[in-house]
Length: 179
Image (tube, rainbow, N blue to C red; front, side, top):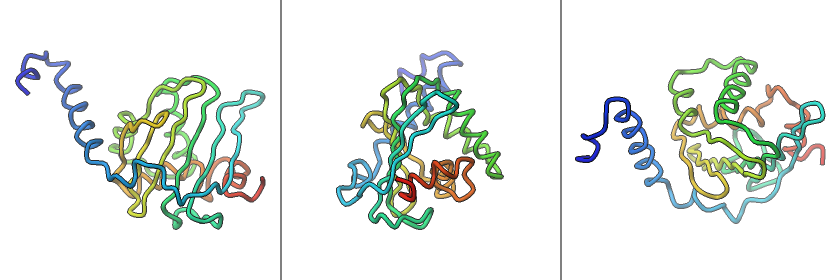
């Protein structure tokens, strides 16, 4: 903290944010960090826009009879086939929530701005939601943050898994209906 006092006014909020995120990540429950070995592949899907292959997704859960949001824990993994900046991912996240008719609290957007990374082709982003609806997000196996808000965890995973998703065929394949 003594070194933080030497930072200029613009760097102080960023330094505090990094410190808080580090403290939050340091307190992650150990069972959420390791992929639960009891989870099995429920389904997989490829997301395309026109002829562009954007990512492949896989859903893992305790049972192949997965029901969202009741079935926990689960893990949703996306393997990106193209590079995206975090602002593009954030913008698409907000757009999907709006199209699903969700009210977006300001703190959801703030948390997603912290949590979402830039991605390169080949990066794998995973969201593990535990039985208490705490979510841990990893980037290529390294923890990048946690969501402790049950509603935010459900809303974020719901982009792909909710009944009112904007891509129902993609969801059906993730749920194993169209393999």
